[in-house]
Length: 96
Image 1 (cartoon, rainbow, N blue to C red):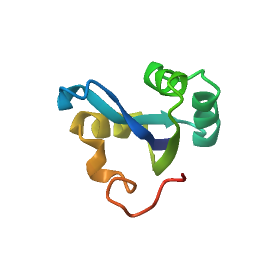
Image 2 (image 1 turned 120 degrees about the horizontal axis):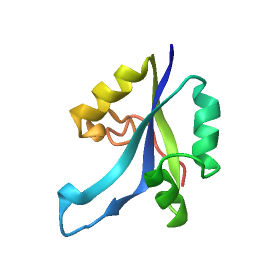
Image 3 (image 1 turned 90 degrees about the vertical axis):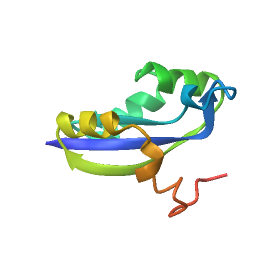
Image 4 (image 1 turned 135 degrees about the vertical axis):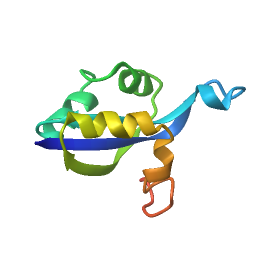
C-alpha cells in the first residue's frame, strides 16, 4: 500500500490556443508519499513537474488517497483531474 497524490500547478502549462493541450495537474504514487513528493520538488521526478519548476511555476499537494499503483492509473485514465482537485473546486485556497 502507498499513497496516490495530486499536484496542482499554480499556473496552467501548455498551448492556450488549444485547451486540450493544457495541463494544471499531475497524479503520482509513492510508497512513502512525503519522500516521493520531496523527490519531485528536488527535480528528480516526472518530466512535467521538472518543466513546471523550470518555468518558475509552483505547485501544491492538493489531495492524497491511500492506495496502490492501480488507483493512480485509474485516476489518470479518468482525465480531467480538476474534477477531483479541491483547489479547482475552491475547497482550499492555494498559497500566494
